[in-house]
Length: 190
Image (tube, rainbow, N blue to C red; front, side):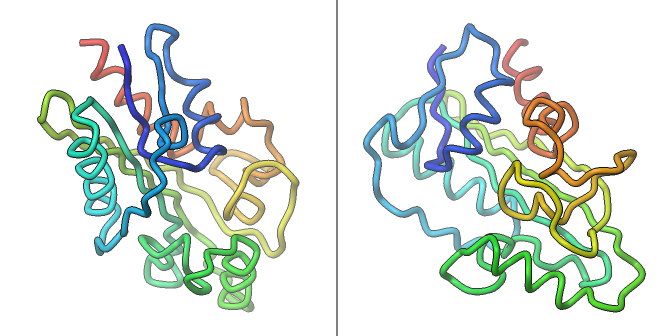
């Protein structure tokens, strides 16, 4: 079955491709030479995932899915949330975003946070949503070289290491994206 993943993010593509059963042929927006920017104008992860999935479905008329993820920090009232990619500005710099979180968390003892992913799937014109959450906490400084985004400052529950200190395999077993994707794959198997 061919399935379009509405992303240009190669890190996400690699992460998801490893989880997808071999019976699925996964295509990215890059594979389809789709270069248009999809404006993420939603105020929630659900809205943004649906905006992206609807755009791709309407363009290619093929089954597709898109995701939106966010880091939600308790002490910051759930920020950066839906604005995670552009928290430090529209230039979308992961290092700047990470440093902004660390500055805002300076001196705060409640470091609870969660990563949340919402996947919007469109199959035959019908829309479905799948959510994955991993709870954890914010470290005091960036640790590790793996992963991307906020991975160097997020320590997942029941782990002594940040996402960036884990291998891709280790991260995929527990990540918010993999939890949402497992729900998607279970749905597709029915």
